Image (cartoon, rainbow over all chains, first blue to last red):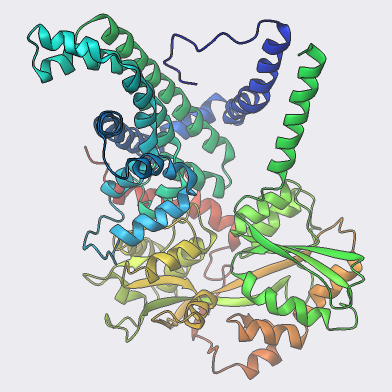
Length: 270
Length: 346
């Protein structure tokens, strides 16, 4: 479920049993583990927490993570909407295949994705493109693993979108661009943002595909997840948890920010 | 559905999920091996670091052919040394553990899994040795012969990230100690480390990944264990390696756990690894035997570098001291060097 969907799907069966089940399930799977991470983060007291998250290397890693994740989200918003548009509005041979391809990045172990990207765009690139161990490589890896989110959230909304509204706009003299901006985009915006938010959350925590292709140089190409892994290997679990909690908190802020943009966008013309 | 049914259903689902999840062993790989005699009453859990897989695949069948090893089955698990050690400390069953460096064993002493006198045998608990070497492309196009050649202009060096990799810490201490061995001061040795890491374009997360990065075409020199370099050659990679004049002796600790249910067989297995036969198998797979007589028979493969030192020499003071002084994430020498090289931009 998306954080941004205000209108829920059909109401769940009423009654305490269903609600109780949901609460137990969410607690066991999400809430208790998250609480445990927070608790772990304060293992060395508040000063230990502060020391861990103000470590310059941690700050640099967090910053890089957010920068590349936001860049990836921006690219995803454009390319994902475009892909969804083509899949819904165009008819061409092999459409089914393309449609099936979209979900494949989810099915591949991310470490394999990393190795594959390295083989294609690394020092021995058959295409002559070597971006390995640069920030471009991080963005490439993250684009690969977050591809489906925006596409899959925009697709159904676009399919449901009433063509008559567009026709009405056209008959009132709107050009294609204008009708896209004034009619289609406002309708798609909640779905785009919801996909973008999921993609962002995924990008922030990505480890497998990134660890192989980034180079992990502190202050330069080391992302937060790799830094956290290093802290665990250096027997500093509370430091690792502290940086993780910071990552969670900052992500939450970004997700809330996106939600506010969505609400604002729904009320105003862009 | 009634309340009770729903709860039963959910409980069932959760139980199923738990069973599935408990079967996922993380990144460690391993296998079960049945003993030749195959009564299979005794199964030993062996937990080791990743490079051991190839050599244990030969050691275990050899042990099962011995009188005491008949009918002993094995469950093996291999992964990054630190990860494996943490898993055993957290309760992964193990009868025999072998790690790439002593601190991983000390962690199990702290958790009460291994007895404090694990290192009280002739070999101080170390079952194999190795040295830090410089792996280069075939033909040595960059003419690398020693540590000083790594900081020449245009040379790219690959070594894993010391905060995430045990083998990287051996590499750092080899480079640092080699400078002291050459008669330089600690400050000069530190300056050398800084210069060295300015030649490092990639810091893979583990020794294994570093080897893959290097064979994947990145860099001119890979700092690595001798046994990893030999393994890469066995696997047909186009590499050769140089043993620098000054380098560090790597020592790999082994122990039987305190509450092993099959102490007799576990101890017999460890004894076999120390036996001439076991040591010979290690030697053939790239590890330096600790048994002097076996080592003498392999002296052509394993020449002793004239400036060989251990983690306890040169005033380094052993791993405990080194971890704090060099690899503390906040105050360590290495963290400081990363900071200086990082030149936080923007």
